[in-house]
Length: 275
Image 1 (cartoon, rainbow, N blue to C red):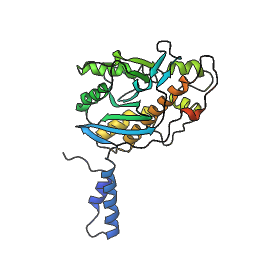
Image 2: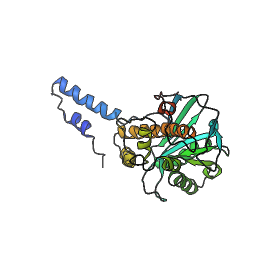
Image 3: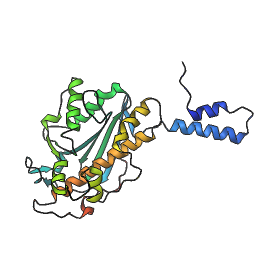
Image 4: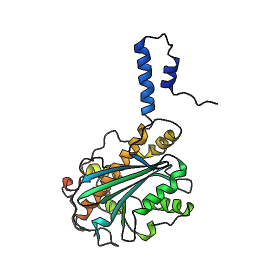
């Protein structure tokens, strides 16, 4: 059975040949926009695997104090890998997979953000391999609730794919816990979106809530518009920039300091797409 036509495509197909030229042109423009809506950000680097890159000018000290984490006293900024996933569901479990993995690393006074995402299930191994390639035993993972959600989910996906699981070899700093210790009861909650607004001065515009990411991805896989999938990528990019900013914020506070540092010192600059 032929696939049902998109509403805009159908409108153009239904426009009679004798219709006024401007009517036909409008229908054609609608059809072209519908086709353009399938376009994705970034570039395809393997079948079904896409990569988006951003480079933010962001000088940072070569070594960061991490006194807020009792297991890690300090870390080289070059070893830090902020990471965040977007997944096919929020409940976790073996049926849930990551369709997008984003990382942020400091490289020569620049925060290099890379986001890999898949547009077909067969590309999952390539996605996991791309993430694993950036990690080594000196890497320090930085996340927000990643110990409880992102890391276990990725470890499961690596095992199911029969691939070496690299996360266990890395130190892991979960910023949710020191953030809760410092700000619980001070703000309405400790969600990352709240902390970034209250502490880092970041206000998101046209943000797609993370809870809508699974539907956006599934909608695209079923032939739908790519607009919301692009918004998922922007949401993920901001999460990564906020992770970096929050890490610097917390590393600049002493154990006895109950006040905030200057938000401008931690705030990420506006992103610019990289090559």
